[in-house]
Length: 359
Image (tube, rainbow, N blue to C red; front, side, top):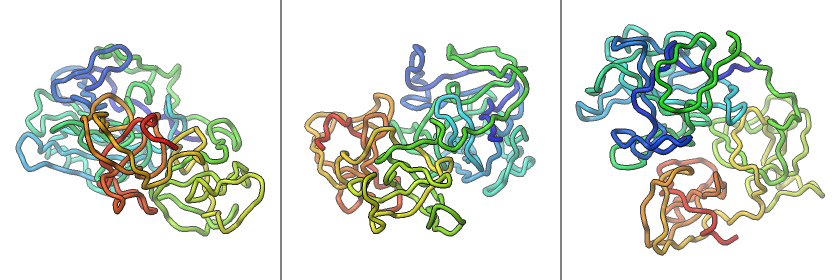
């Protein structure tokens, strides 16, 4: 039984919305500009606890160098795929900030600490000179990667593969709603927080030939059965779209994808659908090759795969990993920095529209 991703507080009270326009709500440009970050308060001006949205592990704790940035940024990663409202059964990671130092100590929050779903994992606070007690949250789809975040505009940061909290999590049936922020939230009809995962071969676990999938410290298996394999991070491509014992063959080159004749030398290994993240639902065998130059002549270099934040550039970039997301590609500023089997977030300069990339 896979867990549903649950809202982390007993009260929904949005004090500052996303920094981009979502569901018709205008972007908040105070301190969330260009990000998916959202601030949640409890029932009053006091300090309410936050609860683990799913079984999770603490991946990183960071404090900046200035008083205003010493926010106790804490990254959590689900220990298994969880059921989300929009993205289905996937791994998730998220940032929580502003928990005061004494509560970090009291709750035993440290890297490697595992929390069970519903267990107290944080508390509202004012660490970092926050204006009033609250918890600051940024949600990402997939496992924790790199430093856990990237800058969207000066001083504003969010998780990789950003998603919107209201569109992914569920409210418990007894959640008290004070301020929704204008966003659409969904309550569970009862108190259960589990869901039966999709059956093997169902629409949520089915990939077609050429589909791109991302491994982030996931196992690339040696065969369609057994546990032997190696831990890998990077983008691979579904080789032939044929599910065998709940696993797919994958290749590291989209041009090797073949559902007619098996060429074992082109198969990198096998993956289990629930253990990897979908990068694109489109066939990638016609995608531009890694390292392909893309010349920007006044077009925008975006800071993420979503939103409109970016910078006008007059420069040549290079396709980083050949994995389209929301009709955009990652690019880098040097052929020496393209994807070579391990995803390195610091090598990605930004994102460009797929329309600028010739196949």
